[in-house]
Image 1 (tube, one colour):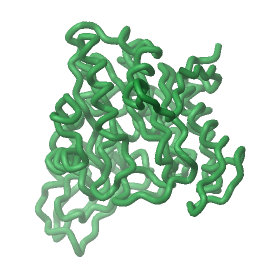
Image 2: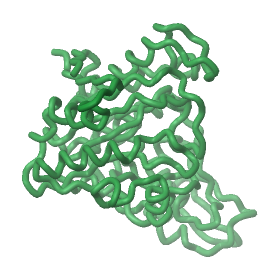
Image 3: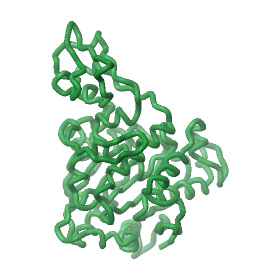
Length: 365
């Protein structure tokens, strides 16, 4: 049976502006029914890297927050810390960046809580028993929340072809160390020129695989590949590896999305903004010209159907003059951006493991 996906375009008029339309989407998708009085509601959003301006505007989040409060919920905005070194690698800088990008309480009406804690070590191990992972380390605040509302910005992505709700959940709410494991199966290595032999990494290695001599040394026979050492080293002496196969990375992200949603049966909703569809994700410290004109805003309780609908709507558009693409309406924009990546992998795998269906019915409101 096809899933219901609700859609509104970006046309506004007196008495019906875009903020009104966000409220209508929330109502028509039935998200209020997910929330019981006093439920803690995690609103997963990307706050944008410092210098990036393509993220979902805080004013939209305010309307979602207001609707959650009207339903009796207690919302908080959240995201997990990044693996790469940017402006969101720890909770202090992450919150500072969120505030700089407009996500202050006065604007959004809810506090910002970084889901995996100060340095990315607040997580819960969730058993999934899937192809790549037996268990997944999920950011604690979202795991313990009663309800999850994922607000995603749809755009291109250099590793997965596109980034939608599955990536927002799977990569976005993985612990910092798990982000390394998702990106690569290569074991970490120590850069002897950077290592100061402080021993900090040995304290966090769960396998006892690291010894400190003149520099830290990792025993490959004992190493689990958990990547805790990569986020522990203050000298950045233990390298982050980004060498993963696109198909495998997509499947790993989907397995983490499965872990994120495992205890949220009937308690999760998804809203995606198909605006400013940039070639790259909001983790870059800049954003390029959108590759297609703005499309609209969508909502569903099925994350797979939602991502599929967003792909179809983007591909139905002609490319934006002056952008990185010069493709007609109907052409695959994401294969145009990243020919080596088959973005279908994430949707096929998500459907296979029961996260949702690629079949949908688009309901315009």
